Image (tube, rainbow, N blue to C red; front, top):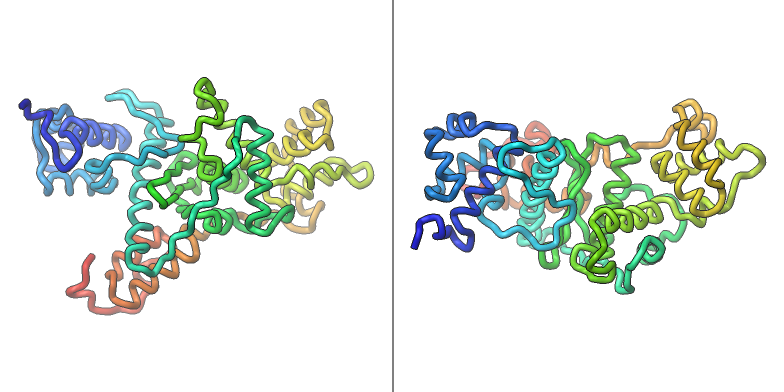
Length: 369
């Protein structure tokens, strides 16, 4: 048997090599750069990336540390249900493809963090809320959003934080500083998502709601949308779910009071903390704006002063200072206080929401990392 068809566990060496190559490309490193960083000759790295040379555990650990991805990224089969997945070509990568790959690596690491806490018994998994009716178009996606709002006990009021809604619906969300938008996966009964903090606040909320839509609608493995439905069409369906979840058309269909149509819409956008484009879209969908008014409105984004005039305050940002769900953060601190994890691991699990100086000093000798 040829060496490049042998495996480490259930993954072939060729696939491990491809994943190392893709991670290197996503990090913007040349073969020479990565080889130098891990202490290998460039020709040896070239053979690893083609599967012609095996990799030992120590080398994999060096690749993992240098490229900033978990070792599981190289060794485990990826979950079948993964939204916004982008395959990378060998050398010439677009920025969007690199960002997607980095988000995917972060997503897999986040899945493992959540799973670790569930295995301690300190984080209780929530059964995902899955919409059981067929979702064939944007109208049925909006119906699914109304169903979810009903399930969480909030038919029409503004959503305070999307992270809490995702947690209620069975999806654990991590907010990360990586560029891009978001990604999500379902691995057995575990549903997780990552959302980039770099986007503007309205876009962050829309991305989180969109990734929740992938879970609730089950679009990645459902045939309700039809085999011929393109990825772009599927994304539009999920976008409709997200818009209806964050800004119910029924509220936007009530129309302006008096002649100040713009002030009314700015007030709703502020209260529901949506992007201006989403507010205009929902108002047009509900018939409160005709196409000409909607087109005119999209050309003039509100200023901070207009938000202040409409409501007396500017919209509060969401998904800004909190990076992990509250129940997850509580489980991390419980694991630390019970000496199940080290202080360094607790900081890692909190993903920037906690610093080592925030914890009382203690001797972690003998604890598992």
